[in-house]
Length: 414
Image 1 (tube, rainbow, N blue to C red):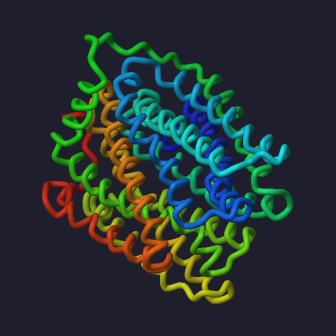
Image 2 (image 1 turned 60 degrees about the horizontal axis):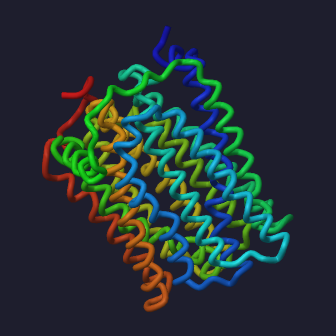
C-alpha cells in the first residue's frame, strides 16, 4: 500500500480533512465579506480598512502569547471544536444586525477580533494535533492534502461570495460561514481515535510558556530561519493585505463578482503549490525550495501595483499575480510547517506554534496600520509597492544558517 493510500484509508484523518475543508470554504466568504461590507455598505476609508485588518490579525498576538501552554496541557481536538462554535455564534450576529439595520463599523471591528481570536486558537491547536494523528513520515503529505483542500476553497469560496454579494447583501452572505463552522465541529466530534491527555507539567506562568516557546523555536537552527523570515513576511503581508480589496475595487474598478473570480484564481495557484511542494523539495531540497519560493512570491506580488486602473486591462494582472503568488506561497507554508512539526517535540508544538502566531499576528497588525496610513499618505498603489519591497527582503534572512543547504526532511526531533 502506498503512503498516500494509507493516509486516505485513515478515517480519522479524513474526518479532520473534511472539517477543515468545510470551514475553509466558508471562511473565504467571511474573509472577503468583512472588508467588502465595510467598503460598499458602510463606506470605509483606507485607514478604517487598515484598522479592520489589524483587528482581524491582532488576536494572533494576544492568543499566541497566552494560549501556547494551555494548548499543550489540554486535548487539542476539544479546543478546535470550541473555536468552531465561537466563530459560528459571532458571525451569526452580522446578518441579524444587518436585517435590523443596526450594523455598524464598530460591530465589524468586534466581530473581526473575536473571529480572529478563535481562528488563531483553532490553528495553533490544529498544528499541534496533526502530528499525533498521523505518522511523522506522513506529515508533509498530510499538510499538502490539507493545503490542497484550502486551495479548492480559495477557488470556490470567493467566487461563491462574489455571487452571493451580487444577489444578496454582503452581511447576509456571511451567514453561510456560520453554518460551515458548525459542520466542521460535527466532523471533528466524529474522530474516533482517542487523544491522550498530555503528560502533567509543573504549573508555569504564561510568561514562562511564552519564553519557552520562543526559546525553543529560536534555538533550533532550521526552525529559527523559518521563524525569522516569517517575521518580515508578516509585516509586509499585513501592509499588502489591508489594501488589496480597496485596490481591486477602487483603483482597478472590479465589482464584487469580478473580485471573487480574481481571488478564486489564486486558489488555482494554491492548488498547484500544494501539489508541487513535495516534488520541489525532492528535486531541489527542502531548504532551497523554501527560500526560492519566498523570492518568487515577492516577484508575483510585484505584478499587483503594475495593474492598469480599469477592469478590462487590470484584472489579468491581478489574476496572474494571484496564481503565481498563491502557488509559491502555499509551497512555502507547507515546507515550513512540515519542517517545524517534524523537528519540534510534540509536547512543545503548542507553545512553538503560538510563538509563530504571536509574532506573525503582531507584525501583521503593525503592517496593516502602516499600510492604511501609507495608503492615505501616498496612495494605495504606492503603499502596496512598499509591501512588495518587504516581501523581497524576507528570504535574505535565510542566507545565514544551515536551512539553505537542507535537502531531505529530517526524520524527527533532534
